[in-house]
Amino acid sequence: MIAVIGLAIGVALGIFLHPDVPIWLQPYLPIAVVAALDAVVGAFRALAEGTFVDRVFIVSFLSNIVIAGLLVFLGDQLGVGAQISTGVIIVLAMRIFANAAAIRRKFFKA
Amino acid sequence: MWHRLALRPTRTQALIGVLFVALGVLGVMAIRGQAQGSPLQGARNEDLVQVLDDLTNRRDRLEVEARRLEVAQERILAGSQGQALVEAQRRVTGLEILSGATPVSGAGVTLTITAGQRGLAPALVLDMIQELRDAGAEAIAVGGVRMVASSWVGSEGDTIVISGSQVAEPLVVIAVGEPQTIATALQIPGGVAETIRAGGGSITIDREDRVQVPALPNASSAG
Image (tube, rainbow over the protein chains, first blue to last red):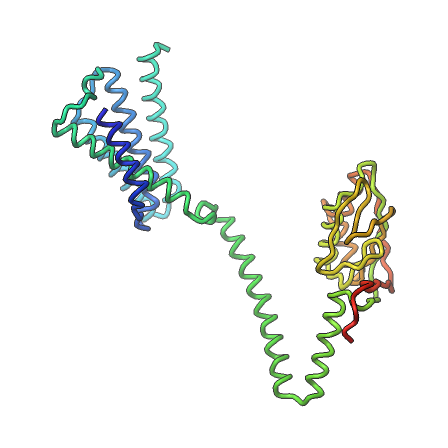
């Protein structure tokens, strides 16, 4: 509930306040969003399995974003930024799919 | 299970709310960033190199043109009236050829095109005119009509219409320009000749030492 409200407020803020993205942050933004989505889907899985812990979600949400961002930053410095962002996205997408599958099995038994 | 998500204002719940607010803002920013980016932003390196090459070539061509014009300007400014007159005359001749005000004759090619069962598409005729121009044709007449900047190609049923007049088959195209270059340009693989033949039509390309392209009937000569 609080999650949905927070998301709605966030989207509204983003749309109405037109926050300017600093140019150096732009390559990291999509990665950060996907990393955060991974944490959110992971949290839903934990909820479904009854093992959800607030602290774990908050830490994983933040650490996911930071680690993904650092990896891409490191890749940029090494000159393999495009490849490493692809790699990060692929890994996160795989995790999202795996968690979604776990949720699906829990709810629909299929 | 769902009671954990219920509205219970604890500190961790508030923190989670804040995180979701951040996620919402980040998501919107990311989507916006994608939407307002230029199409070049997502292009691959090879494509960008190609674009850059094209631009560099174009700039080089324009620089050559600019130098030529500067030289002409200096000649006119520094020289006598006679030289200015010669330059002006040269321009008039060039513009007359471009605008179709005078007939043009010289070495060139005569194309005779018959359409297949599917007829001749206006787009194909347009492609052919473009190909001829690219190959350096100075003056072009399609079905006896001189091609100038304002010419257009359309169709009425199965007949091709050039700038308002219907053109009967076979379509005869006359172009003044380097015959060898033009013939080669038309016969490149996937080019005009191949497209016409693939559509069941036929095209003959006659290289000639002297062809004549008529003037545009209602264009008055400036000379």
